[in-house]
Length: 354
Ligand SMILES: *Cc1c(COP(=O)(O)O)cnc(C)c1O
Image (cartoon, rainbow, N blue to C red; front, side, top):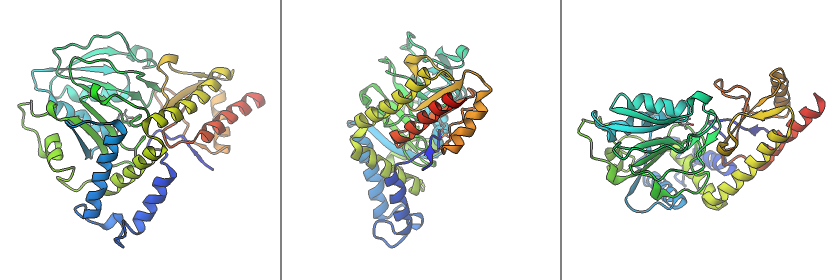
């Protein structure tokens, strides 16, 4: 068995893989492949509807929010958010917690003013800034719930006096949230929700329609909302696989069950990192991510050897991002506990035999 610790695109539940294969051969009894049907077919309309229903159920989303499936990745949201929400003479507040937050900031500056209210850049993003004040005269506050590259995660969210917008690409549906705290949540699917090619956005309707600039049709949230994510051809297959994954999350017991499962996995791995004399974690303990666990060897010369052992043990995708080095084990929802145990076993064997 190969243990898939990839940071994204990433592991999917077996039922999503199996259901995808079936739908490629014969989708919903149509005798056609999901790859060759119309997005306007009633069978696919049912898929979009069920996907929206699952998102609503999993996060207990009340009326007043819209759920859309977009393209262009989370990265296009870095542009669409300020384009749809920020006038040129207005200011948006951003929390700078890593590469993705930085990219969001860079794009927002194309559309208005950006106030970076706190940053962890001076410590290579190894912690989540706290104790900042969100200015009530800014248009919105943008944060990144989980920093995929650095392995930090917001353990709670501020009560924001202005609309709170969160990039949840790498921890969407990994734990319960209080949706009422948020005005917009978005996530590229390929970390914790599905394959690459679709981006989920959950948008509180009343934040829209307040900018004066002309918004290109395809970049206008209202257009996608009004057309039920079908203004143009949506990512049919990616949405279908995401739906299968969300179904799996629901069957497993929803976001509370995911949190329990993810906590168990993360605790097992962090305990070994802290115990094992050869390794150390790279982040502040209180800000450690349950999704992406970053660690290095105390002796840099050991890294090549552990990489070799990991390969022998079929531990796939644990090489750290180039901005941190060392190792990164991504423990997304679908990763089973036994894969984490296999990694821990390898670390213990490494310590004994070095
Ligand atoms: C991967 C990632 C992105 C970029 O997603 P794309 O879909 O590739 O554009 C943005 N934010 C976070 C937190 C990510 O993990």
